[in-house]
Image 1 (cartoon, helix red, strand yellow):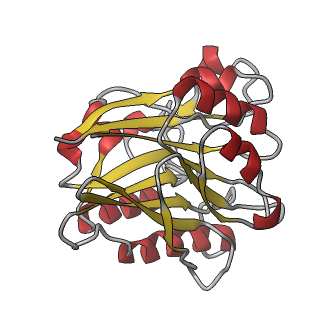
Image 2: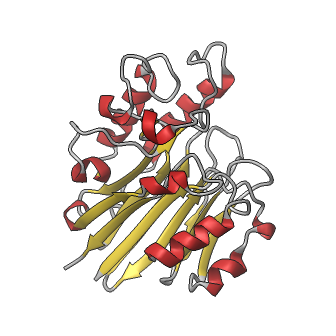
Length: 268
């Protein structure tokens, strides 16, 4: 039994629908988790996905901002959408799907970016981000027998020195400040999560999923960050077959500044 899951901050699902369709036709994931859909539920392009065989669609969206969606060609149901920090801004959705006798609980997250100033005393966006990460400690792998848990999404933090193009130059830049990276690392450890991307790609190697729109020659300068993540409960980690970061997608016409990350599992 195999499972192929992709996660992608699409930066407007309606604007980049042709790119998503191209990705689905070319790479055929079983499940695709999208973030920053920027689309209210009643305007989500469900019909376009169902036409491609993705019959199961779970959405948590709002007009113009944020939003997450999980689409699947395997039977899937919505479990919950959580509100964090008392702000209903559509940043989480949990779904479940069955693989034989095994159930997979899948969390799809879009963590706040945090603004430009890494000081929670003067920047409420950064305060919101830190509080959001703290509340995420309540999201832990399922303890239910026969259920494994996967957490994916744009977490907007690059935790390792090799998750950014320059550790020293980005220490005071939001997404790589010590308070953020330590917060995310604690979330991993306390929640008993496994960072599957770093299980597959050694921590000594550079690994990026985001390149700024401000860089005209992004591929040459390669000033990227790993903001997108794939985690799992410990029981699922041995089933990971491969991770692919689709770097080429950053060079597509009118791209997102994030690229898809694909995780493939093989269960015995």
